[in-house]
Length: 263
Image (tube, rainbow, N blue to C red; front, side, top):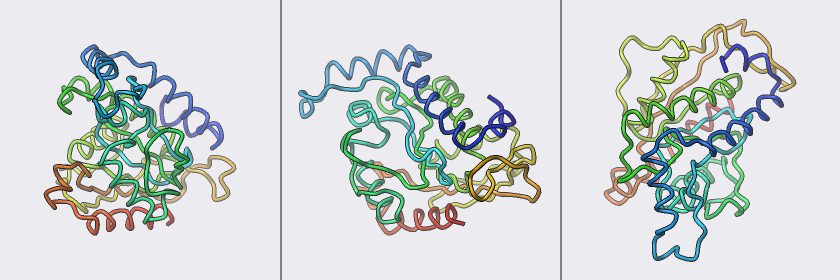
């Protein structure tokens, strides 16, 4: 689906297409190595979760389909989202993320333990560079390339309302830039360096429409519109246990992201 086609849809139609897209993601078997690994982990399990029924499939994105804030993570954890079936749910990275989103007013509760725990996101959509758990948390370049097709389709549907993108980690930062470049966005000649709190303002191509103020339909852009890309260290244990990422640092990113989304 091209951006132009997505533009012609009403908000309700785009929301329905996002739901359909997640079903397609769940059925994906493009990468044999990832298929074998995610399914083996779901059978062998971790002792602490031996009574759980693992998801063991590609993990769909989730959140508010009319979101103005889009979060791009890395990949499902083998015993986190690959177990629960929801991004960032069931591991310590998710514990950090949802506490911070709750403090920023973007989530209705500070924890996520299962798909049925009542968590809802406000004006926020969560996706990732990879929808399958990779062995040793190290996807191959061709696996990242294959999964980037899903991110392109998601952004096509989300961009008319999107005001802010947050990339969690350098890999997500690079994948976002590659995705936007392949979609024809006018990007800085030299890609800005990733860092915690990095901020880049990117002009939305004129061919991409936007919703009108009351959300009833799509209208043509007549004035320049921008999306702001923010960088944040990933809330992995490697970063949080060492103090490289503190809650104060994380909160600063989400406070800025929430303000941009509201604006």
